[in-house]
Length: 210
Image (tube, rainbow, N blue to C red):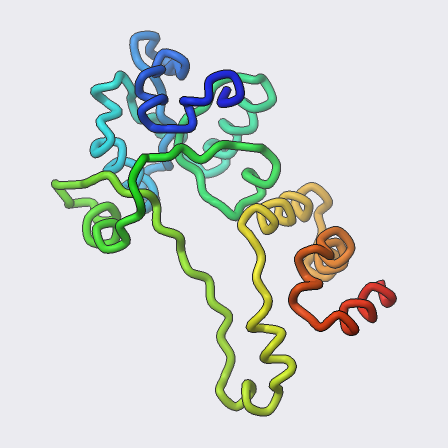
């Protein structure tokens, strides 16, 4: 959809083209697929739905009923080349399998407002904010860092993108692979990522072992 209409990559473009996202049960409204009841993302998506003025633009929030149904709505829309607008997160197998576009809200993330208001069910004054990223840290003991400097250096260097993680999660799901099998797949398929984590000589040894 974004290839055909690039403005759909922005929230203003979405609002101006609400008719492209028909509601499954009400032809007079457009659909925003939210999270199942009881999930925190139902609260955050709901507050941002209000702050962005999506109801005024003709949208209504749709409760998918379950996490499986939410994922299935993306899969079904993608496979049938039908429109889809809503909330999902990464890294996940779903976003590793389907190439979706993150809609630009036109503002940066405001972590303080996000935590104090957007995540709180009783907040009455939500403002527009991009979703702040959730930090993922690797933690070691001080003793380990001191006694194993080479291993600690490796851990400090190790990182990968949400896109790569989502793709690996999708591969694991499709192949019913456990962590060990996935590790071999990652080493074989993503040398451009992991070779930056280790010295060149070590990287060559790993390639030879594979």
